[in-house]
Amino acid sequence: MKNPRRQTGVLFTVSVETHFWASHELTMPDGSKEPAHHHNWSVRAEVGAEKLNSSGFVIDFLKLRKILDNIVAQFDNISLEKMGYFQQNNPSAENVAKYIYEKLESKLPNGLKVQSIRIMEGPNYSAKLSK
Amino acid sequence: MKNPRRQTGVLFTVSVETHFWASHELTMPDGSKEPAHHHNWSVRAEVGAEKLNSSGFVIDFLKLRKILDNIVAQFDNISLEKMGYFQQNNPSAENVAKYIYEKLESKLPNGLKVQSIRIMEGPNYSAKLSK
Amino acid sequence: MKNPRRQTGVLFTVSVETHFWASHELTMPDGSKEPAHHHNWSVRAEVGAEKLNSSGFVIDFLKLRKILDNIVAQFDNISLEKMGYFQQNNPSAENVAKYIYEKLESKLPNGLKVQSIRIMEGPNYSAKLSK
Image (cartoon, rainbow over all chains, first blue to last red; front, side, top):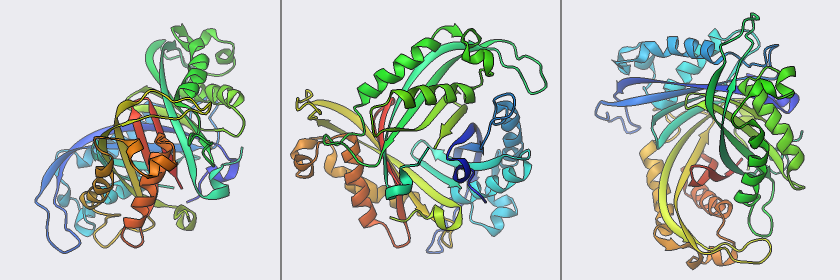
């Protein structure tokens, strides 16, 4: 994906943050399983545009929040391992970011790009996928 | 504007955050007006330099805070639509970021560049203009 | 140092945050000394990789936290001026970031790079060293 910053030297982004509650059970690099545990996950989606639209927006905050909330709704109050994606991919914060990134990118209006998805497992631990 | 990161591969920045209280009345893409409403806005200004000065600073935090506070003072406790700039430009968070970016860039000591301006309308919604 | 983002257009990072309590006595650009004062410093270390490992991690959060905590332990509950490094370099937030950046870079497993170190002196003031 092309970084809009490369073209003009300036980038506008808007970020919206939403939240979900879910458990995950990670497979560790040595093959062992972490005990399943819950987090109050936060998701911050940052969307970029080289130019503002005629209203001076990248995108209306509430419109972006609605698109993001529709994606995140499928995570809420579940064990992540129950989703097919996380049967193929370890349900790490990194992979949660990747899943949301791809879904959001496919649902944005023309001309907008996902700049980053940050997944916070709590105040001290986060994973980010960015361009 | 040139991204100092491109030249050396490393960038030092300092960020200071300040706050103001103001109302805005947004014109939406369909031409309708949102009802006027207030926010406790936060402004985070990030300033970058390729090298630290002889004191090991990008810029003294308090000096940057003073420059930023002087710019932000004109927003505090007003309806943004009363400023000439926001009669020409919808008073979106994006345009508030743009205004502060340009003002701050013109007031920084030589050798310093604004790296980003982030405007937060609350904990879940922000707009950023960055290089 | 090479920015992994340049190679693939996408970057995964994880960030962990830790904290320490220390005083510093800054020499200002005019040669004067600020009175020694304490902060509850926060350190956010962001580590990047172009690809996730076979577990879907950049690096296990707790492993990164342990490496970072071992570096930060030497700062905790001291006057920064007592460390040799800060007798050579003003103990600014910028230089604390630089010190931690270099130490962390040397201790990361192969294939991982420090993407940024952010040092927060409080909620409104921070310094960052990034690629």
